[in-house]
Image (cartoon, rainbow, N blue to C red; front, side, top):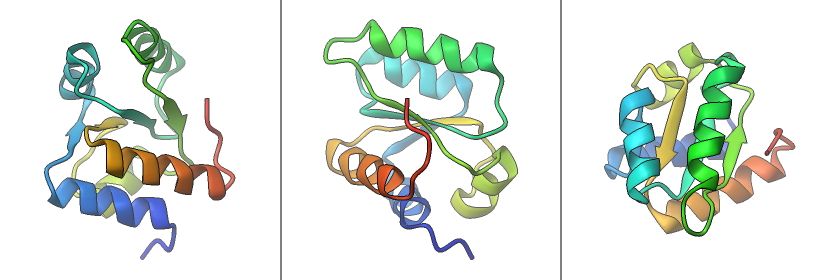
Length: 109
């Protein structure tokens, strides 16, 4: 079990139906303005990160993007969906998850 609080919060957001997981769903959430935070696994390509950062910066209110230490397989194990990118689509969850990621000294863009 992972003791990082942001992983636990991502799991709670998943159960609440507040995550968009995988490239197509996450990109759709970003482009529609539904996404409040974009989270990248540690093992996705730089091209994918650039694509999402560009899409996020084009939105009104610019959506924050963060990279975490966990891999795609770690995310699958803890959240239950195999994805290298996901979005948090709720302002309350996204604010708390972003704070926890920064507290854990994880690289935040």
